[in-house]
Amino acid sequence: MAGNNIVTGAYGVKFKPNNKMELRVAYEIPYTARRDIIQNRLMVDLIIRY
Picture 1 (cartoon, rainbow, N blue to C red):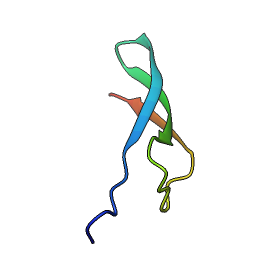
Picture 2: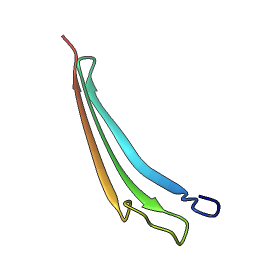
Picture 3: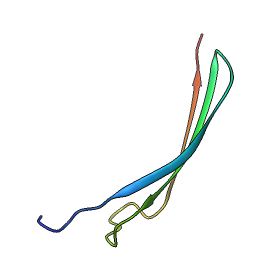
């Protein structure tokens, strides 16, 4: 598996309207020429605390 490295980076924001809710959005892209299964990826998290 030598030479099969992949490096990615993600850029995102976090929105916290109150103490009980949190929304995070991130966009991940590969930095290396090898893309493998990661072409471009959008990730979304919604956290609700009770």
